[in-house]
View (tube, rainbow, N blue to C red):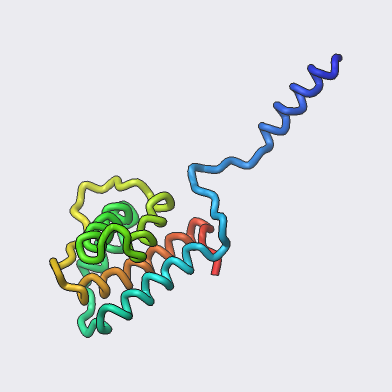
Length: 144
């Protein structure tokens, strides 16, 4: 066999054994999502008071549905853009979660955030970030 034929065969064998990306983005930083969440929480603490209300069981249900994770993210991003602007750190950090969340498959409506109610936004976003953390851990995308 010629060297070129052996090289082609070797490349084919290597390609068959190469790990597959499975459609998930490659993390460049082992602590990326953890840092993003901490930054969001720090910013929320600076601009709002600690919520005194708690989420209803229906609201928790809307936030925990995997089929609504992407739709809920869009709701939080819309509120962040409308309230803080498109260039805010909260908005930029929320955008970073888009590639790792499952595509919305549900026809259900996402979570509702009361307009101009920062306390409602913070309370629901805190719960949502905890759910996202658990989701990323289940997909082996979370590194503390």
